[in-house]
Length: 464
Image (cartoon, rainbow, N blue to C red; front, top):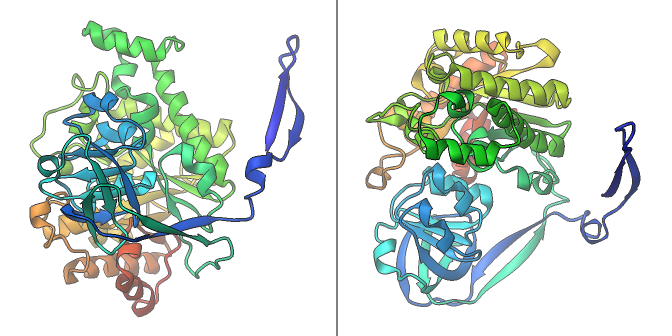
């Protein structure tokens, strides 16, 4: 809709004075299109790796050593680097493709590539060495799991498929969505809502500042950090409000796009090294030898070093649900190791206006730790639903680094032990009548596992 507004200067009332269909977009409202890609010619292969995105793209390769070189990457170019982390998020949005030396199917580059909808090749081992800066390349991820980088711009064909007439399965497929800018576009897809909204994307892109640096702005000693924060937050006398309002706005945008369908928002799950990269973050973060199983997820929310920041998250979620009226927002706790942690976190949320059951608020928990599976029936006393985080659960069940390209053959969700863990979680959820779903790209990557979970076990998945 094209809507015109007017504000009365004396009464401060806001009026809609005109509303009409937006003529360009309205012509396409009856169609939901996805594209399939076929490479028409094959040139000289430069390198290959794991392909993500099922797409083909071409452009100038731009080799970057760090996010600080982001000004070198022009829109439509192919980013080539060793590996990415959350600091790269703003840059990845403008890349036409991503190629990394390191990383697997669950690495940061792979996850973000899926979210922003670009082709990516990860774990090439040598892309930064064999691709020249400025070289024209084509990256093809249209033929299975392997992605190939070719020299030069090759020809390919695209075929449009209208998915607006597709029926829905008995399960309730939901989207993984982190970018509010994409929300209204994807809200027309035949899905039951958003099964995972990661707050990290909004924090990285819209906020950029460590929440504790905002909460304790007056105590900061580093003049350059204070200057950066002041530049971003000059219109907020209380710096903490900058975090709360921007986080609420990002969540509310997605909640509005999908309303009244559920939007399940996962509380922040940065690792300490990722938090440290936010403005002002180094002062508030520990140095850990293994952040992946360190100070992350639920362990932060009640800890004196971070509880105030989590309370800011709670304030933002309360604003979205109650002040803005988006009661379709559900809240999911990440990386909750023990039952004691579950109780502590649920109690803190209640103290901050997010009491389970109040105004129909539902709380969910990620199942990504073997202890979550073993004690699923007990965890169900604290939560209304579970979401199986297959990547972390595989990593912690097998004891294999999910981001290691050297161990990519071992990191296998089809491993009998991992499949048994998932089956146990489903059985416990069914016994306690707790909603349960699978979070991640796994159902799309491995159709055989869909059969394992839904047909053999005869257990429905309420969301994905």
